[in-house]
Length: 255
Ligand SMILES: *C/C=C(C)/C=C/C=C(C)/C=C/C1=C(C)CCCC1(C)C
Image (cartoon, rainbow, N blue to C red; front, side, top):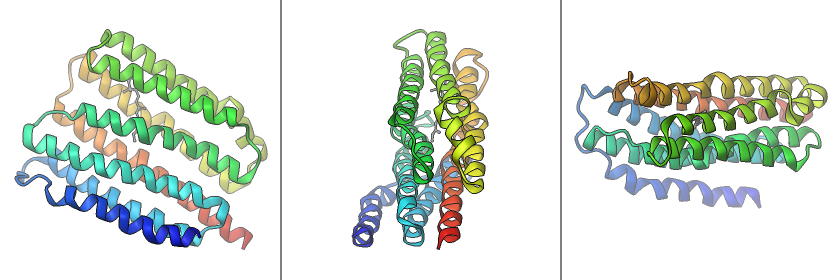
């Protein structure tokens, strides 16, 4: 049944993107490096999506959901990158609202991955899932209200940082962290620990961008967008590759 579903899912995903691809950015200038980075990354996201979906055929049933979620993250991001790329190429503006809509969907999905990889190897409570989701919402809603000017910029930053701190607490010292430390086999432990460092170091790029872009008033919109784009390669594609790697290793170990 899963295979049949995937047979439809892949062409559907590709077809749903093609009109957006076709109408994209007629006039990308050869020295518009931010625009070029939007192009490169949107294509890398499409390719990663196909890869994660196809590779589900290779892993044990209990790992398939993790790979599907990785593919959904890159799919949702790819579509947003098409729009962001157009906004940038056409206007030179920072596509803030598209970024946040993308984050609102992809960041909770990335958080679910922590729950899923632990769930594949042992019993974890649904509380882990809910705490990570709530932390994500607080982080993103605070940040958006601040960036969009609905609340004071500093207040938005503080609320956003509190949400992120809550996530870090859960994955390092909370129930999720304890389960990973005590019950996980070596390959899952190492994947979990790399994922955790991505959420610490890789994710730190976004609040730094917010700080320099809106509070310290220093960063140019060019550098801000290039930095966010590169961060997404690490936080979405590389994050998915780590999960793919542990799923394949664990499936082959048990085969
Ligand atoms: C794929 C996109 C990802 C992983 C985006 C992550 C975004 C963040 C970790 C944003 C964090 C923020 C803060 C911690 C405080 C200030 C406001 C935000 C939203 C930029």
